[in-house]
Amino acid sequence: MTRRCVACHEITPPNNINYCPNCGHDFRRRPIQQPSSNDNDGKLSHSCEYKSVCVEYLRSLNWNKDLFNREFNRCYCKNCYRDSFPDTLTEAGSLYVIPRGWCRFGLQVDKVRADVDNIWRNWIVTYHGTSAVAAQSIVAHRQFLIPGDKRIDGKKIAILPGHIDEKFHIYTSPTIAYSGHPVYCPSVRFQSNITKKYYNARIVLQCRQMPGKFQVQRETIGADNKRICPIIPNNQVEIFTTVRASIVPYGLLIHLAETN
Image 1 (cartoon, rainbow, N blue to C red):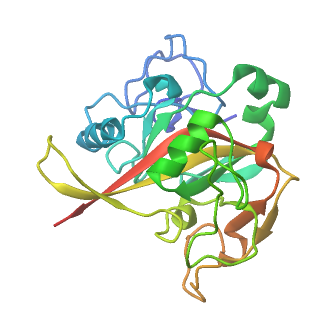
Image 2: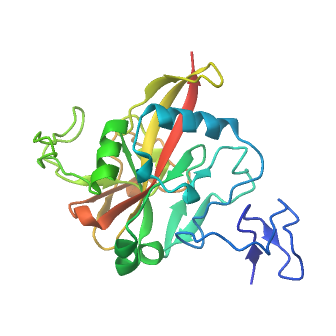
Image 3: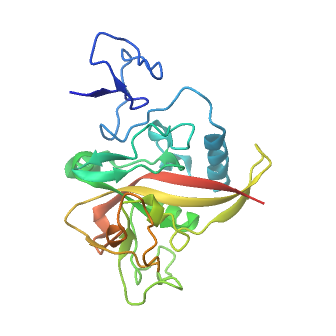
């Protein structure tokens, strides 16, 4: 059986060595408990400027720190997640498309819920693009809302301009290339005190989603024949459901793109 290092995912000799020959990870160290065998926090040993700026942006949002679980932070920038690392993994028998170019900040997940539904083993990985305000509400209140639902302040959730009318669903995708599209994921201009540069910042929630409780359809953003994701075909990039409890966010993903 092929053995891969939990830190860098490179293939290593099957036994009789204490350190990974690729990244130097010590196999004798007791691993931190992780949400699954594949989706782990295999941090590389170097410092990462991209992750530092993502942390800076996250702090600017003033989210309650109790919402986060730092054990599952993971940077997927080109320096932390190398080109030689796999583009996909398998989770719950389904393809998990790695969110290259993004940085994940782990979220707290209710342990009883996770254990009862066995979400780390049986639920697939999906993505939900949204605004920072909406993402905070979803994570803080532990639920996704559907157009027509009332928020805690009494206001009704409305279908956003440019979206299809009379479609009262929660939308996710198996690829961040689709969920991270500006139609779902508006960017916010941000200046870093670390680099003094300006960035367009986007937010996507990384989720576990229950199989059998959703439907799959083609893209609805007008891409036509232009390929959105090199892995997932256009006719399978959009997932929709009305089952609110079938989606559990476990990671906040941030993407920063330099701008003038």
